[in-house]
Image (cartoon, rainbow, N blue to C red):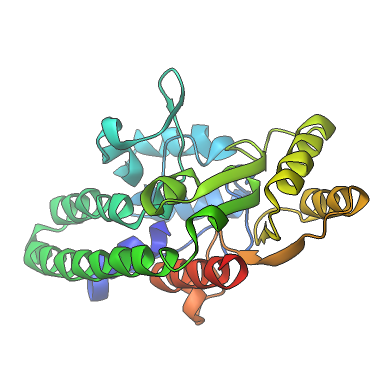
Length: 266
């Protein structure tokens, strides 16, 4: 998602190397020696921030002492973030399209500061992408509104979708917390099974960057209670799709998720 931002704002003036690809969980990702070499060669480093890149945090902090290193999400007004503990915020801000659009300012400012000769291009490209994201945000609102209000319950493997729920009026439940570093307990799975059966929820969702075993346990637990629940589809949560596919762009990823959710829940 961050690579997408920098490519859209930077255009022809930047060459972007993306360290984490499709299906990669950033909470658990560890920098390889090759990654560190790439970071050392870069003129600038961009990352999401808000502790999303948990195990890479120290590496990114060291890079910030040597060259521009921009945590794009940390420029968002803290009053608009979801606080999960004192001074600790949910990092999954890209699921609220309007909120993610606010990260464009950090990218534009950083690129223009590093390369002032092309500042006007960065400004123009950021504005064009900002307008595209405003349209996408409205599209998400329209599509989710097609789901009956009492069906708007999103059950996923880990707690990545609360910004999505707040922005588009969806109740969100998950097995794991906001970081996949936390293990899912049997108690949590059993509580969710009871919730799903009591509410008559018909679909739950797996994520491309999270192991499916916990969702499978959820489905089995519901079956044991006599309630049939299906896997409604695969959502992109902490990673986008393969490069060259619609889901390999931020806009395409969001559209894929919304279509899957609407199809399964409406």
